[in-house]
Image (tube, rainbow, N blue to C red; front, side, top):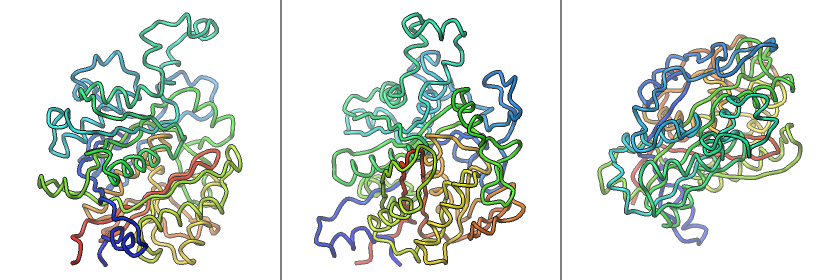
Length: 422
């Protein structure tokens, strides 16, 4: 099957053909590896990023594990902006963008005068830096805070900092705050910009840092796992909060071919919806609709999908609901369905961006990452989650699910690049 189905289906529907969009650069920062090579190795090995949280004082919490990034050196990647002027999430975003640019064989001088699009998803923005304030400073309010701290906090800083670091002026920079699906929202935004010819390139992804606010919120909800995250396992007990970032360099297929770029994957299509059903409970019908929207946009039939990177948080409600939706869409015969959160924890707004990087790398290198920490599949989760060990696979089409609080759902389809059959 040719994965150039977007063009074929657009023509069949009588709509104008859109430019094909490809991933030609990947930058990733995670608890199982920083950079493309380390991250790919971590995925293959089923590496665990779990360790006791050090980002804040965990006194009083019964469970204190998380998935922090240990070996990140921002000064290696951030060259123009003083590192101390960026919060940790912004450091992640800027560094991942530079990684993606370098990985794509591009430099900032070559892009400075081209039309660009930057979109970054996040849940917490610069909330990590609020953890540095004393109780008295928090009580006194923002007007009393050090201006340096105040500048690092706004969520919009994540995308603006990338534009500033790369010296780009002819660029649209936006930040999506649609919680755990924000990375996929940002990718969809970049896809539209390239498809419609509004931008020559797009840097899209997500970034978040471990912070007390989010950890405490999930802890109070009773959803923090005591040791490990075990998606789809009968005895799973919840999530682990994580951190990191991923940024994809997107460009048109024509542009990538003209400069002889390596193509990791083609972005075939995406789907978005928001049901606003409940602040935290997922809605099965809405998730099902979102997956079908993505498949329709990509021009892909369910039976053509080889792998699903699930949202897979490791909570009872999410795993069962998502698996039921998957089985509904795929007629009870779903492709292998894995959860990266078993390795890297829930990286919030970076989650689906890191998953997008993993999907692109899995397609390129021909393997399926495992769902680790797995003992026994919950009978209500009727899927093959590729337990504990990666497997080789010729992946043609991969689906990545991002499902967020308040029903903000986003699904993206990636395909192995194949020339259009004439």
